[in-house]
Length: 187
Image 1 (cartoon, one colour):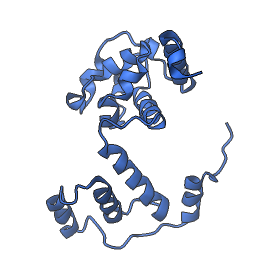
Image 2 (spheres, helix red, strand yellow; image 1 turned 90 degrees about the vertical axis):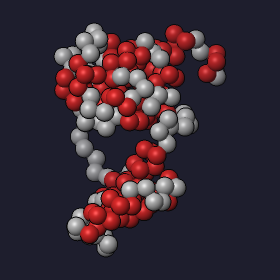
Image 3 (tube, one colour; image 1 turned 60 degrees about the vertical axis):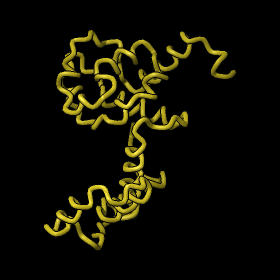
């Protein structure tokens, strides 16, 4: 069965069930607007936070997966903290980013996943973020080699960035997590 043979209502139900499996109840939103009013970076979004929640409640998955808002969200959880119905909005944004990547949709903000990959690569290798290596990796991937150079030099001169990575104890446990062999927890 291909995507076009599924009715819009069935696609909407399937999307909403994905959210429910993650305990994200977008149907609980009554549009008070507290989430949007509290978002510290909402001015940069193409859809405000409340619109993202409402579009999710309406099953508008495709529109959401192509939005800038899902990539710009800092996951600070201010929106969820302000929500009177305790909707996990940062979790919703995570699910939307995950779905977009799984479906091969080009991120509306392509540098954000590149930074994320660079960060995770650094943690996977060193057990923690090795900033200079992580930023070098990101700069090469993004093609923005000179952006933020002045800030980087200032941080380096103040001793905030180290040339040599500092390793951690039990780095093998971190590597196991990244390999999928991490500890199993009781569910």
